[in-house]
Amino acid sequence: MDFEFSEEQEMLRTSVRAFLADKCPISAVRAAYGTATFDDRSVWDGLAELGVLELGMVDAAVVLEELGRAVSPAPYASSVIGARSLLPDLAGIGTVAIYETGTRYDWARPQTRAIRDGEMWRLDGTKVHVADATAADVFVVTARDDAGDLQLFETASAAATVEPSASIDGSRKQGVVVLDGSPARRLPHRDPHAAVTRMLDRLGVAYAVDGVGAAQRSLELAVEYAKERVQFDRPIGAFQAVQHLCADMLRTVELGRAAAYYACWALEEASPEEAHRAATLARAYAADAFPQVGGTAIQVFGGIGFTWEHDIHLYFKRLLTLSVLLGSAGDHLEELATIAIE
Image 1 (cartoon, rainbow, N blue to C red):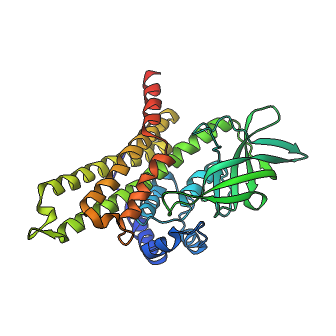
Image 2: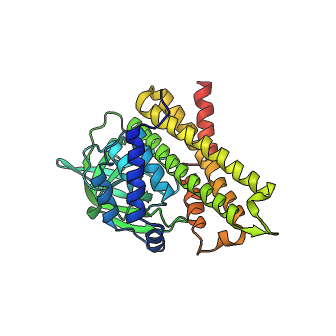
Image 3: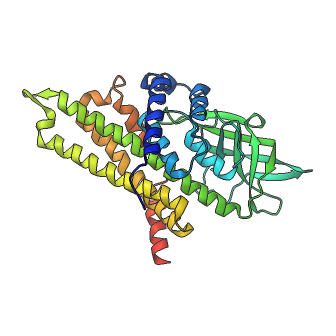
C-alpha cells in the first residue's frame, strides 16, 4: 500500500487546479451563489475534456479535493460518484433521488411507487434534497414496485417537475423532484438495497474528500491572514491563542485526509466489509470535525470573517453542510459500533 501520490496524480491535481482557477474562480462561485440553479455547462464540459469523468475512487479523490478547494458548484460528486455508480452507462449529468419528506436518512422504504406500463414503468412520488437536481439530465430514483419491493429506476429530468430548494451553502444546489406518471426504465440490479448502500459509501467518501479540500483552503487562508493582520504592533499569528487555533485546524485536516483517502483506497481494493467500515469512519469524522475547521477559521479572521465580502464564509458554509450531506456523526458512530459488535 503506497500512500504517496504518483507523478500522474500530481499532474492531474495541477491540471484540475489550473482549470478551476480559470473557469471557476471564486468570483464565478459568488455570481452563482444567490441563484436557484447552476447552469454553466462549460465547467462540466471542461472536466470532461480533462478526462476526469471516468476515474477510480483514488484518482477521482484528487479531483474532488480540488473542487472542494475551489468551492466549485460543478455536479461532479453527485453525477460521477453517485449516479454513475448505479448507472455505469450514464451519458451527461445525472444525480440520485432517494430521500423523501419525513423519513430523514431512511431511504430503504420509499413511498414513491412504480407502476408497470408495458415494457416501461411510470413513477409517482416526491423526492427531496436531490443534489444538483436542476443541472441533471437524468435521475436515478428509488421506488417500490407492484410487489412492494425496492427497485431502482432511470428517468429523464424532462419527465419530472424540478423545484429548486434553499440551502445554507449556495455552492451546493438542491431541489425537489416531483414524479407524476413519469416514464422510467428499471435498472437491472440484483440487489438494489446493496447497490444503493455501496453508492452511498462512495458518495459519502466523495463529500468527505471535497471537505478535505475546503478545510485545507480554510486553513491556508487563516494562516495567511494571521501573518498579515497586525494587532498591538505584532502579527496576530505571533499570539499563542491564534497559533493553537491554526495547529488544531492542521491536525483536524490531516486526520480527515488520512481517513478519507484510506476509504477511497478501501472502496477499490479492500473487502466489502472493510470498505464499508472505512467509508463509515471517514464520514463520521468529516461530518463532525470539518465544520469545526470552518468555525475555527472564522475565529482567526474575527469580525471580517462574518462579512459577505470575505471568501472564508464560502468555505465555512461548504463545510457546515457536510453534516447534512453525510448524516450526523452520531449516526455513523452507531453504525461503527454495530460493525464492531458483529
